[in-house]
Amino acid sequence: MPFELDVTESEIYKMGKGEGKLEGKVEGKVEGEVELLSELLEKRFGPLSRIYKRRLSQASLANLERWTDRYATAQSLREVFQ
Image 1 (cartoon, one colour):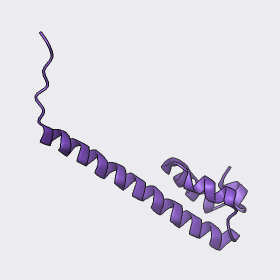
Image 2 (spheres, rainbow, N blue to C red):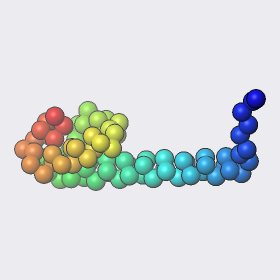
Image 3 (tube, helix red, strand yellow):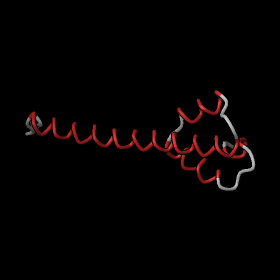
């Protein structure tokens, strides 16, 4: 007997819309973390090189959170990004 799935188009739309909202929230959080950490680093260590800017812009949320934690005790940018 073939498997039948009783899902309407509107239910699929709602699921997709919900997933899209979640992805948007995560992207917004990452962008906010990048902006905040960039500002903190520049105030403490001076202008960021292209390499560090690129690392920040391509970072995962987990890396951004780890670098933000390291910022508190780091003596240099190198220590932040270890």
